[in-house]
Length: 203
Ligand code: MD3
Ligand code: FE
Image (cartoon, rainbow, N blue to C red):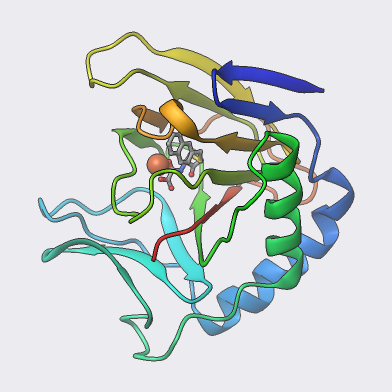
């Protein structure tokens, strides 16, 4: 089922379900090389989600600011490569949503435990805003907030479940968005976690 969220964004319900096992295996391999960590915002707050990256570029934040970096600051080594399955799934989903030429070079992985959240923000660190973002939700369900072009614009709420894929592009690319504090039932595969992958073209 394909559900429109905005003029250029779509929820592809269950789109990643048949790849869930492969995705979870690939995630285990990534985090064995680049472990989950709580990053710090420029304002000095510790994020409630744990993050890591794969691909040529990874999104990082610390007291110096938000940016993309080719090395993991914890190890000084390049991020693990983007698994072929991630890239293939992202291209498939982007095509399904009308974006034919998506070339992801970065994947941010976020892990939510109960209570973890992501407050309303815009994703503005990528160079080419004409490229979409593809996100894959795994594990516990979460309530996603989709706002407008200003922080105070009204938000709509969408439940994102295990296996859902969302594609954001065009005029929706710069909308404010966030994740409500995680709550609810544990997931049969991931227990008390939600893992989200966001594939982007950052460079
Ligand atoms: C809408 N992550 O990592 S994914 C993020 O579930 C982020 O971890 C959330 O927001 C998560 O920046 C939401 C969905 C998402 C990602 C990027 C977007 C929605 C977006 C960029 C523009 C508009
Ligand atoms: Fe975001």
